[in-house]
Image (cartoon, rainbow, N blue to C red; front, side, top):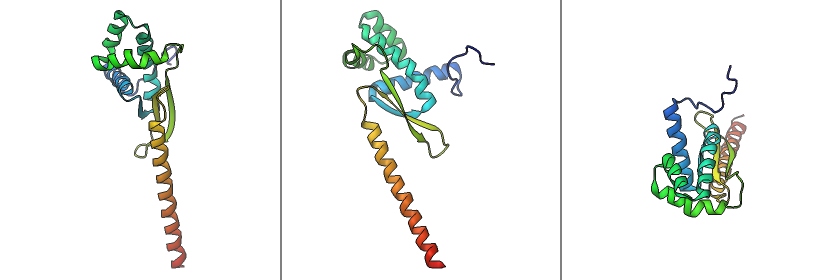
Length: 152
């Protein structure tokens, strides 16, 4: 039984899981919005929220704490100078996970993982792609129905 055992294992060893979540956090800070699996996004949410909370403090100790996780000075600078001031009066909830359906290959649940206030770019792109795919499927069905109708 998993009583009081929080967090998802994500099919990885502890070190691999830590590296995965760190890389997701770094990508989110760099791009402001990324597409990943829903469980990964939900797990990375805690890491990113913690980093932004440290960045809001703004002191040297907080910068060093964030550097322990991100290990990229340019990302840390961007986090402290650009992102954290935007959330100065916000008590938490700096990220958003929007489910976008399942991946075609393995049917994994996918999500857009984005920073609040930087939304829209990935979501619009995904919605356009989904509509394009739906019209293609509709056209191919209509074509197949015409073919069947003509053969009878």
